[in-house]
Image 1 (tube, rainbow, N blue to C red):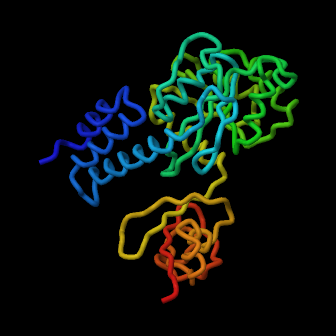
Image 2: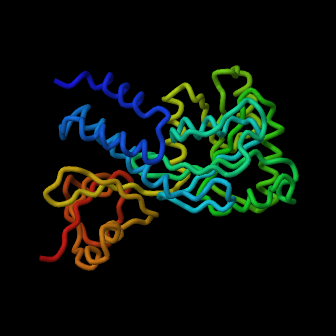
Image 3: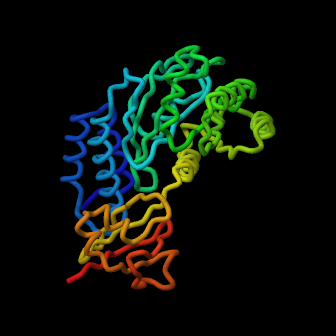
Length: 311
């Protein structure tokens, strides 16, 4: 009889503490082999979580060395964490991705861009922490040109700002981004809210009324989930779930809108895309569950798709 699923999840996370690379991969495989093979219920969810962690660990091992300012894109989208020195970016990245990085309550703990892959809404997203930008970064101060160059390839920005700090530092950061001509979908993460007051948060919102503000504490999983939702929106992706014939398991597929049935088929194989006649679709884009649609049917976020091929 397996132990209660909540206790099992705690045990698994304890087993993974401090493990990375091949050691973490081996431990995840061992955990997966020990878990009961239930197809539904809490233990099925645990298996899915372990499998997603295994995928993250495998891909993370291929990420470019962190001493380079060039960050090779990984995952379905790339979102950069930007802010002044000591704005809580490293702690936030670690909480979102579980990557082990050096943090500290002093400026310039991070000196190079740090990439980390993390599953958000069942899709691997690359988060990149950018070292604290200084005034004059667009002119080259503090290696600013190279850091801003990394941002140009991103799909979105999370502006990180200590909720209890004065807004002037964040205004300076936004000024550097504007001077560099960087305009990307942006959300403001008000960090360290457990140390801030209601007045601090009101001041921040008043200073930046045009930005969506997400209150974040690395100690609050619900707040981190809200930030994950906001990051997903920044990516602009549509997520659909692919069901293969005869298999109840669903595979998350991320695409740029407008995404059609044949676009989903192409993620499986180009031969499947050629043979695709349409699909059975359930979700927001369908009039009813399992509706048969054509290959050019436009899908919506959250749709479940079963490709229909010739023969």
